[in-house]
Amino acid sequence: MVDITAFKIEAYDDVLALWRACEGVGLSEADSRDNIATYLDRNPGMSFVATRDGAVIGAILAGHDGRRGYIHHLAVHPDARRQGVGRLLVDHALAALVRAGIQKAHLFVFHTNASGIAFWESAGWSCRHDIGVMSKVLH
Image (cartoon, rainbow, N blue to C red; front, top):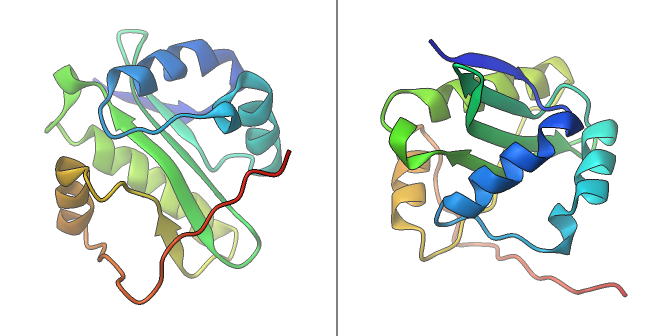
């Protein structure tokens, strides 16, 4: 049985270990404990953790800016894939965004993450080719 609960900072070490164990998850300083704690505080009840027998097997980091929802990390342990865990996490995050009045969501996936792209497409998401992401480090 899989339990889905809100992502609390107390689960950070286990979630970070999961992110590190999953290909396709890009981590940076933005994923430090302090930064994730701030993100979770700004977006309460939007991110979730999946556990089985007390072990973290999946997590999703999601939130919004007041008009658009964003999924930054979805990860499912390789041993728990193809069991519906990812879809459960996505369903929980999207339901939370809808409750907050968000009508559209975006996510970030590396172009080289073929399995990730296939998952998202199978869940009804589509790649956009009319926009791109640009970034700048602010320190």
